[in-house]
Amino acid sequence: MQEINLPSTSTMLSKDFLFGVATSSFQIEGDRKGRVDCIWDTFCEKEGAISDATNGDVACNHVELWKRDVELIDALGVDAYRLSISWPRVMKEDGSVNEVGLRFYVNLVDDLVKRGMKVFVTLYHWDLPQYLEDNGGWLNRDTAYAFEKYAEVIANALGESVYAYATLNEPFCSAYLGYEAGIHAPGKTGIANGRKAAHHLLLAHGLALQVLKKHCPNSQNGIVLNFSNCHTPSNAPDDLQAAKLADEYHNQWYLKPIIEGKYPDVIEKLSADDRPDIIEGDMEIIAQPIDYLGINYYTRTVYQSDGKSWFEVVPPATSELTAMGWEITPDAFTELLVDLHQRYTLPPIYITENGAAMDDELVDGEVKDDSRTAYYHTHLNAVNNAIEQGVDIRGYFAWSLMDNFEWALGYSKRFGIVYVDYDTQKRTLKQSALAYSELVKSRINRYISGTE
Image: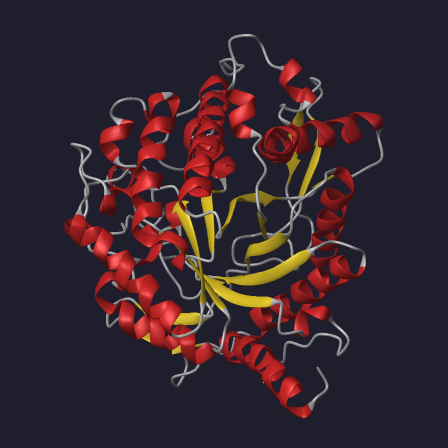
């Protein structure tokens, strides 16, 4: 079996470094009847929106099978589990609390804590209640204040049983893919829509962070952002400028306001109509100190000039791609982490998502996903390289615990280290899960032998 190894001197092998797995609510939970509809329910009903015409009604049936799934997570030996709360499972349209839905998460967190795992909770992983979208969704400033109230419900219910809260997961995807490019729910388009949604998401983050700090001051309270290096096919000045603009527009747009209280200079390139409405006091709310930054990374992106003082994507030229068509670029991962560390004064970092979709096959009860195991090996070592260069990284979460609903791609792509048979809901550990578990459990042997 292919292994995942780190240098014996790596601080990632110490007892203080956290290894975990991650999931999100809409992608695994199912049980649509147990909640109000979200924007993804509506989007899935739109012809052509989901590549395989599926939906999240059942997904991995996690709401019913959660105890079995927790046992599986525990058996892997990981230190932490990152999950997300379904806003529409907790809050009813009239603003009251769905006590049955809330109890599901209370029981889940309690079981994880009893097993000695640290729980990372994400308040928003893209599944906005449809009733809020009907009133404008993230284009409506009021949604940020609805999120603040929802955050208070969760903070009061789960409290400091949760080791770390994240307000949002990847606001880039919610804003750009959902409201600007139209690839994700709710399928709206336009620069003005994307920038307005992004601002309201960041405002929601700031408002919710205040709530978390008030009710859960001893938890770690932060946000999860996704990043992709912006590289160029040449050193031509126009291409280098295009990559700089792309980096500011797609990456720094979300981090700079949180760390420095202002949007990057690329905002000046936008017309007045496309810029978000920034009300006095907004940036102060957004820029409150965070206890940690969650970073999600999968691949780099190559940009060139479009000839009109803007940028365009250059398709990958390499043959080493994941099933998503993404380049496998671990060196770029190290580069990204070091660059962010040098550019900003950052709090501690957790790698909250990293992984790969591969063309998995279940053969004789096994999934020999050598390519995914190799991906984890190189990317965990990329994290180690960044730590050696001074980046303060405290943990790493594999994405994903199990195969699930992969948004606009339905069930056609498998990111899990656990194989899911969607007909029977049987879970099968892939080779990558066994290798990851072996790495995590090897630290115990280090403590026992006295090498730690």
